[in-house]
Image (cartoon, rainbow, N blue to C red; front, side):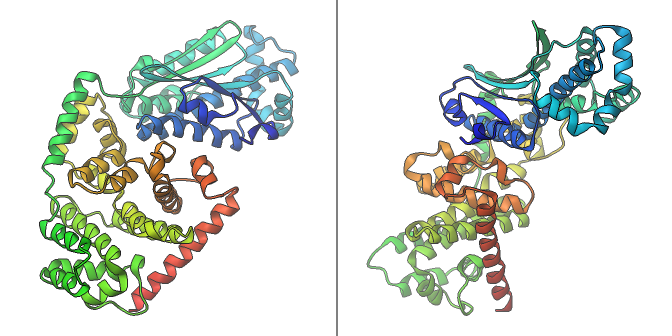
Amino acid sequence: MDGEEIKSYTVNPPDFRNAISNETDFYVQFHVFTPEVDALITKIIHRYLEKYDILYLKDTVITITKELINNAIKANLKRLYFRLNKLDIKKTEDYRTGMETFKLDTFQTGSEIIEKLNNSNLVARVSFKTTENHIHLNIINNIPILDVELKKINARIKKAYKYTDISDAFDDVLDESEGAGLGLIMAMMLFKNSGMPAESFKIYRKGELTISTLTIPKSLIAQESSIEVTDRIIKEIEEIPAFPENIMQIQKLCSNPDATMREIAGKISLDPGLTTSILKLANSAGYITIKKVESIEEAVKIIGIKGINTLLLATGVHKVIDSRYKRFEVLWRNSYRRAFYAQKIAIQLKKTKISEFVYLSALLSDIGKMVMLSLEPDLIKNLTDLAGTKGLEDSNLLEEISLGISHSTLGAMICRKWKFNESLVKTIEYRRRPHMSPENIKALVYIVYIADVFVEVENRKSRYEIIDEDVLEYFNIRSLDDFNLLHNILKETYTSQMNIENKI
């Protein structure tokens, strides 16, 4: 990686992707928590969690890690400030004197003291270690925490696990001279609400080092509960209606080399609902034509057998999901935009043979989320109790923690039940962790992944800095400018086609 040449941080060993893949220990070391280091730590945590399909913990783990890093940097700044002012931090009187001016002085001379910190021997290190059942993050700085500081922090952590609402914490911290603690308490409450036991976090002194440790289970659900949760998920999937028989019959006809387009169109036309859905999809942004498609036979001629087969699957999924679960217009809109982007990228890469396939994969990749968000409240409550997670409102995070799997994995399970093509199933399963995808479908997964990233960026749920590096290399995206160029082309094309559609 290129980080070492900038010298704002050190990674050892340098290839963190290989280290994560091989479960090798490594660390990132730096003086100051710059935006560059922030992006790197975020990317590493993302990659770690996706490896074990617990990516739904990302926001929580990143929030806590950043809070601990900032605390470590602040502690280093404090020691440096005391040194520069010839104050002994271990003496009560000097400590009080220094703390009275520390914040104001460092704020006023921020760049100056930061530069001195960069040239000092005071560093912070984030180390990553994997054991059989856990991921261990250690945030280390090379100055020992004082007894008074350690006592205060441990008291806050203990309280954080007792609070039921963040408002309970304000009275305890707002009157403190340093005003510190609320950020850590909020982070620890997130940690607790994600199902982490109190012993998952600890802070201690070891010689001349201060170490904060996060211990993250590769699975949040206890083994005995996991079996029961799995049974409930399987039962829910088994109760999802079978894929429509008439659509499966038309698909077989599409795969028959002797079948004519007129025969296929005639079979589709026997189902008025299917006909309406196919025509609606055929006129959507993904399949826009010069003029409005008004008949199934015309649709078959223009779009082709492959395209019709794709539309059949998409229509069938719509029917099933809408018959059992709530309708999620926003998710479907995102899905169609993602599918459009994926198809255009495949065509741009001259991979026209898989363009229909990536369209379908991108379109269906949120099935698991739709089902997850529609599970019966009683089922979620039971799963929540089993998983030991309480205190969160109904949300994606709660469902994923309760189920113990990501919505991508759930989507793959549903598609497998419908006996969809295994490559399609795998593409949906791996689209959130692309570097782990089987070699034979990497192109499919990477295209769907980058299309999804573009949509997530538009929804302000992702950013360039945390994109999987393997995917960036695959598309030869070397900078934010390259990324924005491709994104803007796709956005403009999509908007243009939608405008055409609206005029038809």
